[in-house]
Amino acid sequence: MSSKTIPKAKILYVEDDTDLQKNVSFILWKEGYQVLSAETGEQAVKIARQESPDLILMDLLLPGMGGSKACWILKRGAATENIPIIMVTAKKQVKDIAAGLRECADDYITKPFEPEILLARIQAVLRRRVKLKEYGATITRVGDLAVHRDAYEVFVNGGKASLTKTEFDILVVLIGKPNQVFTRARILDEVREDGYPITERIVDYHITGLRKKLGQAGRYIQTVRGVGYKFDARRKD
Image (cartoon, rainbow, N blue to C red; front, side, top):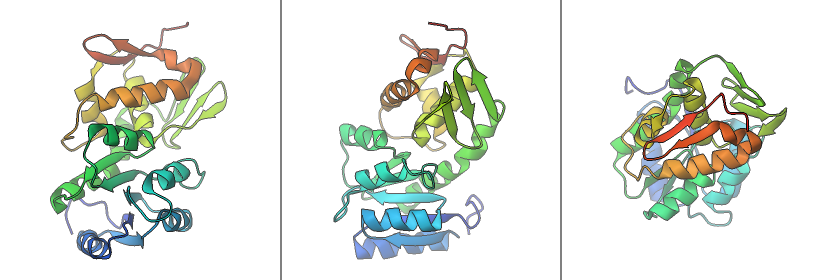
């Protein structure tokens, strides 16, 4: 077992290609992961609710319920909303990557992929919670906004905001160092531990979604033109 692997992490792999399912499952098992399998979106939702995996690898194109729909359902379920999801698909266009991430996926990898790359992505996502402990107290309150890091919950005026895992991670990074400007590249580095091969503009999609979901509290996330973003705790309007 790799020394970097999170011991006994449970991974749900959702893939309808039987050969690929067997090959990737064996690779994961060999690395020390517990592996659960599903072939459809419906199966993925059912198993995730029953088994509470630490991470889900979700193919986008599935028979019946597609990966995007399954991802949407899982991220809105009380028992599954905090399970990170990596989409695995043959689609390579940036617009498809952005759409997948907006649908609540936490990362994205295209077929065909090298096992080393897949394992690196998995390890990065599983380590992310540890890394986020560097940023501030367990509960951070700014005006009408409250961020509960350990519970992965965000509240605005007492109402819960439903964020994707990546949106939550970006918020934690920004609010953890208020008024410090983060470039898009820096944000990607902070929330993804491996080299991310797609455009830094993906960060803009996440910021747009984050502001929308935060409602009036979205005012705290400020654009610094030509540079990136910052969390302005002093902003009142």
